[in-house]
Length: 319
Image (cartoon, rainbow, N blue to C red; front, side, top):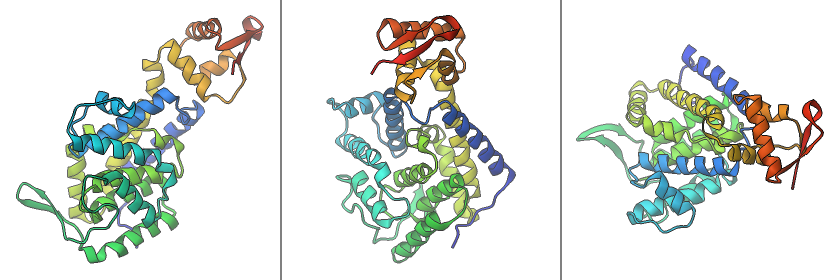
């Protein structure tokens, strides 16, 4: 059965806005982030997703762990980061409609943290707020059927990929297939579903914005449980994705130095020969004078060669 939700104007407007931004991302080649931006976003993704679950490590500590440096902190928190690093490195190997992939990812993510990893729970569970039960998960005997139906939905539904990713996230939270790790698995699997259509989502840390709106995240989940539909969660999740893309589009010109812009451009371009206009097409908000200074810096540092002069000038990337 198709999971229940309604399509409203807010959802349609958000999909239009996200689609427009994805077009801008592709036009600026931001779907091929530089190694520096790729690493920064991966750190933000891991740190935010784990912080939602109570991990105390800072962004600097997560970066140090990724750089294989020694970090002082709770052993459990460090293990969570190491596990998350491994699972996100393998994210493209997982199949979004496969129970085996789903269980494998959970086994990696929760290794050394819980007794049962990579196995659907065999006990009934509830989610509490104080002494009040806010969500009673389906009984363990129903899990195989519910997860099979979810993977079937992922595989054959013609829903828009953005909607499908949000529904997938919500359904994992609702079904609660594991004793622990359901939140991080829901966020991971939403990323995986998005990746099937939009490569940029491998490195877009929308979990950071979920963390900043964590209380609202839980309240929306509770609302959807009561209503029996994931409509409001779709709205919330699309709003997060839209804001994350907006941040990405503003990042390059807001924070990059000359060195970072040149490194980024050389890494992402598929052209051996390019003009100043090609450079400005990527960094749309910098002036022509800034672009000229950037390119002069790259020539002086033997990163590119300049051929010709003034309007006829073009540049060659030195391999």
